Length: 247
Image: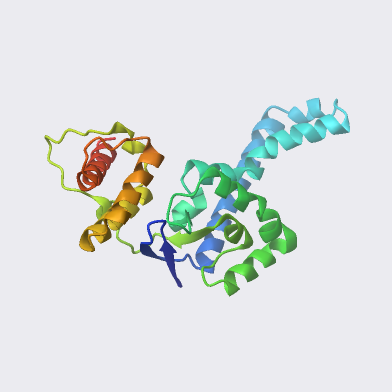
C-alpha cells in the first residue's frame, strides 16, 4: 500500500495509507451485491407480487421506459447519494473500511462526490472498468480519473489509530461548552485543527495561528470573542469533543 501525504491549507502534512486496488475492487463488488439485491427485491415485490407488468403492458413504449427508469434511479445514483450521506463512504466502502477524502485534508463535499460520480461513466462503464483500473494501478495515490478531477483520494481506515483518539481533549464532567456551532466541523476538520494548533504552538508561529482561527470562523460561523487565539482554538477542540461524545 502506498503512503498518501496530504498538505492542508495550513501547510501541515498528514500521512494516510491509500486504499489498495484490491480494497477498492472489493468495495465495488460489495456495492454491486447491494444493487443486485435491490433489483431482485423490486422485481419480486412489483412484478411478482403486485403484477405491475400487467399495468405496464397497457402503456406506450415511452411511458414504460419512464417507469423502468424510475425504478432504477436508486441504482444510478447509489454511489453519489451514499458518499454524500455517509461522508465519503458507500456500504461497500464502509465494510471494507475505506473512505474518500480531499487531497487538501478537509472533508469532501457534494460537488466532489458529484465529479467522481460523473466520471464513473469513463472509469467504470466504458470498457468494463479497464480505464479506471489502469489509472489506479499507475497512479501513486491509487486514484481513478474521477478522483484526480475532484481532487480526492480513497484512504484505508484499517489498522489505524482512530480519528477520535487523535482529537480528544481532556474535559471534565463539569465542563460547560461555549460554542454549539462546532458541530459543523467533521472529525477530519477537528484533527487538522489540533495538529495545526500543536505545530504552531511548538514553533510560536502566530501567523499560522491567526490563519487557523480565521478558517475556523469561516467554516463554523463562530467569532473569536475570547481575544486569545490560543484559548479560542483550545475551546473549539474541547467543545467539539464535548458535543461529539454526548450526541
